[in-house]
Image (cartoon, rainbow, N blue to C red; front, top):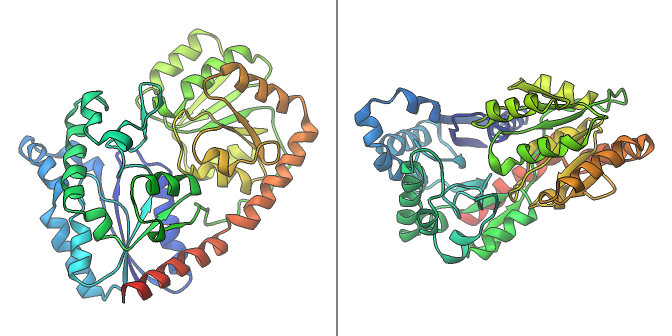
Length: 391
């Protein structure tokens, strides 16, 4: 099979990029031809004033991406296109290019971008369904977004215009949701349930189970409000018995680091690290913490933790409550309650036998659901089914 993967990278790399590259390599390993067409939002910093002025129009429709996509499909005899992200540089024009060349399209739903200009369904410290229930214009009413509002306005225009043209429902043949929770959100928004297939994230290699632990907890994530790292730091005011290591970057990194230092908390900020370094930290940790306030889709860090045999303490939001089985592969806590989080940390820290049981359960969960081979079977089945229905 000859597969075109289209992806617009974010300015700050994250789990989505890791999934894109892992899936591409997995397909190549099984003998498929994979062509990756990728642009990066990092290049926006180098845009001239005039090019930045034209960015909203390009985000709605990029003639350059449209022509390049058609050219790749023709020259490389592509059988199917798999889109991960189109914002801001690829634009939804690539869907039309695929349709023009008579190639079926799959879209992975890494986030809630089609339902919310911010892609998070999160506002002012809480889960938000305003755009989902009352229309995308709510993002302007509540001034969602950051720094220049032009980014929110741009996303709103892209979504509005392509909804008016029925692009996302007409030009996409299959959606891949990473969890049943995500599938449910899109079904509630009117997306065809029959087109949405559930396939979880995975990791392309097996890091192996490790029983050699050190006394520290680990958090890996972006320093932004919806990820709840500030909540985790507040909870650590109540914890003087266990060091915490945090890996990640983002707009709130410096502020939260200074806050933790000012309060003399037992927290080490490690910044951005390579995937190998992240895996090494996971294997040595007692447990991993995901303190997200938003309705998470499917953080890849969970699969990495399970693969290493490390239990996860996660907020009971979104897909986290679906993926982490409470009292089996980890513990769930209320993200509105730092006492609850501190209590769950204390419970695991003081019960090493429970950690061992959960570690074994987590490893079995990985072997049953999240290996590369199992994921390949699911992915290629979705490809074949999509091509058959398209033809």
